[in-house]
Length: 175
Image (cartoon, rainbow, N blue to C red):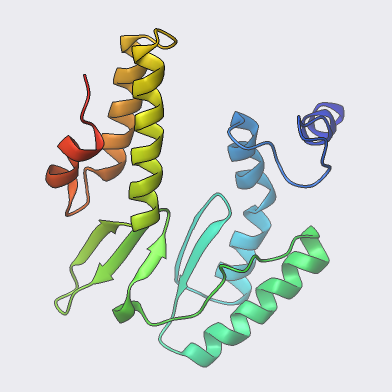
């Protein structure tokens, strides 16, 4: 417990709230700490279609009113049991309109096929990051291996999207 407290409290920005982003422990803490939410949603609320990655989650149900009640119950559970709050991104919508999740827009087609498109803000963030990496490479600050790893990471992120072929050259333009 002393190590966990040290990791959480001794962050560079000196806040005592949240987890250090990018730290491997963040993934482990999310799995461990939010496991209670997973059980609550699956066992108490009886939601069968539920996905969570880190602190992002999707609940799918036919009844919008039931989802509204679930949201209230999850908020209450998180506040009382975990001392957490849901953020402003929390929303209830129709799957036919699309689902924004993990940097993608997931679009459900009439025959049940799901098309993934990269969210515009994700595209822009990638472009900016890659421009920065290119500048660092040109100045000799990072090596070819680093550039290769980052480009591969971005390409793997977009490769299942409909735009992957179009954006491979656009997003990853330099060698």
